[in-house]
Length: 284
Image 1 (cartoon, helix red, strand yellow):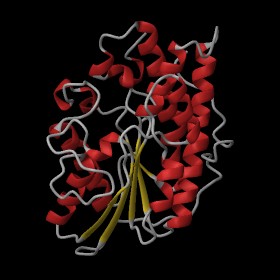
Image 2 (spheres, one colour):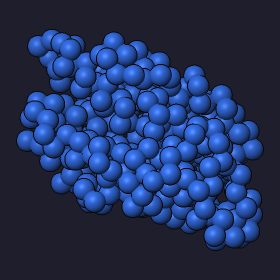
Image 3 (spheres, one colour):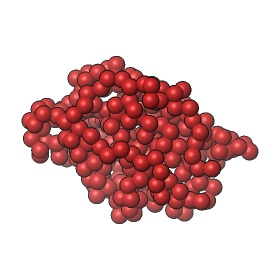
């Protein structure tokens, strides 16, 4: 079974929860105050110019500084707060899960990034899921889940949803005028870094990633959150978009992510994410 059965209302992501949020594109020439939450991808790890966390880094080649540059080229003054830190996970539970499995997860979005969202942010972007999927598969490799690895994965997907709800609520409390744009989780089993992994590991990565995307992130469209669909975009799986480690994008891959964000920011919307597509079943 591929899809995860998760009670979306328990996660705060059901259709009955629709907080007021800014809508529509920014006025031409208006100032965009952009705060980015993320991990190594926000720093541009794998690109030709990696940024130090919490710096403006105007020449950085990761998707965050590239997004800021593209917005500036379109006439928008931009104030950037890049909160991304390599290895970070969404919450302390995934931080602990990863550490117990031998992964060097040094912090988390909720405790170390969310409090520093600029209060006057007009746009906040979030990209979470990759380190969480790796934490889950690493824990399974260490024996977590016992005879029910699928059940363990599903529990972790639900925890991911709970953490995301906490994160969204905190951002809205800190920056009530911000549009929130999130990128869903691509099928990690289809990325080059897992090409040589066992079938069991790739199946676990797929179940976790698809569950996070379909039962957590994609459901946020009902909360006035703009969701960018990486899961069902074939470009997410092009080997030429990845650096030598097979996990982090290269300059071209980050430019692809930045182009999606710039379009979402300047148009005020993004195509609705798909709830089913061939990319969700790459591993049988």
